[in-house]
Image 1 (tube, rainbow, N blue to C red):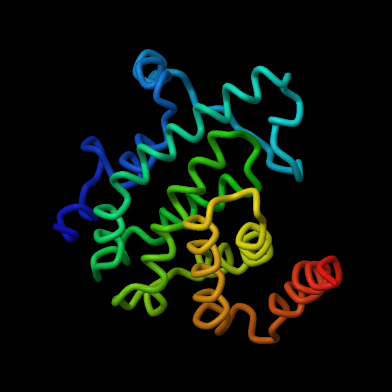
Image 2 (cartoon, one colour):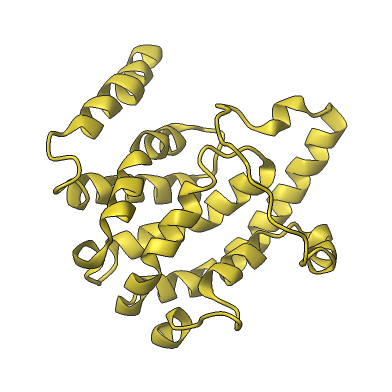
Length: 207
C-alpha cells in the first residue's frame, strides 16, 4: 500500500494533495474547488508572528474554532497516513514533504498552523522510520532541514500547541541533529544556535 501511495503522480492525486485536502477548513472545501483555476499567490515569509494578530476578536475566535475542527478531522485519519510515511517507499516523498514544510515556516495564518500540525507527524515518521531516507535525501533538502532546527525547537517548547504536534516537532528536531548534520553542519553551528537562541532563554525564564 505504501509503495502505491508514494508512486501517485499528477494528474492523479499525489501524497501532497492528500495532505492539502486534510488541511482545508471544513466550511471552505466547496470554495477550494470553485477557485481551483486561480493562479497561486506568492507570499514572502518575513513576519515573526501570524496574520491573526491583525484580526478582530470575533474573527479570531471563528478562525480558532475552524482550525480546531479541521485539526480534529485530520487527526482522525493521521494514524493511517503515518503508517504510509514510516514504510521504505516514503523516501521518495521526503523531498516534497520537506519543501512543503519549508514553505510555511514561519506560519502566517491559521491555515499554515493547521498544515504544520498535519505535516510534522508525517515528517517525523519519514525521518525516523525504517528506511534509508538519510542516505538518499538531496543536499538541498538537507539544507532545508537544517534551517528548520531553531523553529522546530521553539515549536516543540511552546505551550500554544498541542502535545501531539509538539512531540512530532521534537522528533523531527532530534532526527535532524543526529542524522542530518553530516556534510551540512559538521561544525555543529545549529546546535550552538539552539543553545543560544532557544534553550538558554527558556532555562533563564523558568528560573
